[in-house]
Image (cartoon, rainbow, N blue to C red):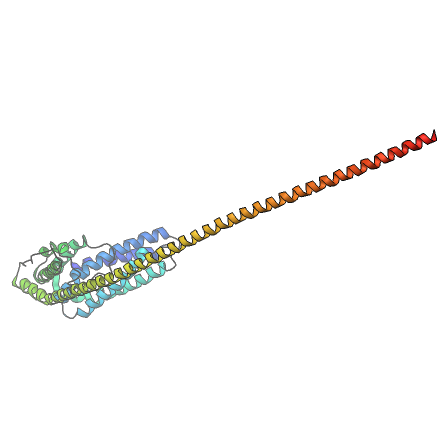
Length: 346
């Protein structure tokens, strides 16, 4: 399939989804969520095959499209961030519709520039055969392209290539486009080989002298970027090692501080326990002494009270006995007087 026709078909598919969203009711939350999910998938696939195959081929083989291609990549970047936010946003969110509207406006502007300026230049210089072979490669790549946005991932060569995903694609591209694809694929393999434990052999392009020369130019041009990437990775590893060593030293210092703090806390706890033990002993001794004193005082008080009561009882008994004796004597005298008086009267 013609590469430009394939991309225009994608544009048409996404535009139909845009129109469906615009016609959906204000409260059609379920339908809007379904439409936006389809938009996310279509635009993610579309952006992937453009960035990984179409743009690199155009930048190498077509004159005066470098700036347009770079601007398109930046527009993709903005769209991916919008897609990543919409992917997690609830359709009931007050900003959901507004964010989709801004996304639609950005994509429509992007499509207008591509179809009006970019595509015509590519079609004119690549020609039907190369566009057909490139389109077939893109159609194959589309089957394994990501269906979700990845705004933090690299968007230009060599960082955005995954060697395995497009290794089989390069066999289907010819001449200028084929040379470009082989050159890009080999650089991609070098990037993947930077990962420890992975080793990939570069591919040898077949076809015309023009294709092989094109592959060499692309490979040589991108090798510098890979070397820079490798140097950056080595510096990152060195920096990471320094950070690890520094972190380990700090950890050891912190460990020593923790040990000292633990020892100090243990000693403090021992002193506190000892003081508490001494205080408890003093309190118990005082309590025992107080209880003994209280018992002695109570005993003495009870003895004194008993003595006082006994004395009181004795005195009361004596007083009562005396009173009774006096009363008896008085009664006896009174009885004798009464008897005498009675005898005289007779």
